[in-house]
Image (cartoon, rainbow, N blue to C red; front, side, top):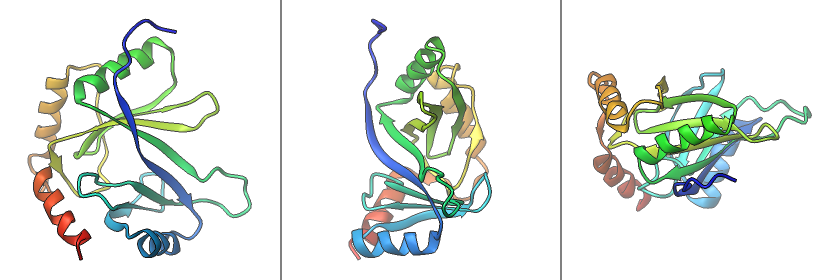
Length: 182
């Protein structure tokens, strides 16, 4: 085990592959009071939906189409951990590289920066930290996590400059809080 300090990471959401996306969205809305925060075309094909019941979390559940019937295909899309800040995410990236962990991709979602990698049994894990902005999802652009946090912040802000959906995250959270209160 490494003697390097491991930054804080908190479990925040799950992603599930679904056979019937619409019925799964309706189920979680009806039974747990989640609201749809975003959705659209998924980069691997099909559709993806984001749901939350917390105005400070863009999503607590991700539902993605594409789970084949009777295939034995795992319904787990990803297990996601929120880290405290962009500097810690960069530290995790360096530690994952040092540990020869298989990294799938690193990206900005506009509203967050993420590292996706695989555990020893092939389950996808996401480490992420929120950004100061909200943009419509899905949004995914590759970034180089070996850069400094300051450089990643500038690069992402430049990338979002012309995005018409970009607003401060506080405004988005206030709007979601009103929706949650009904």
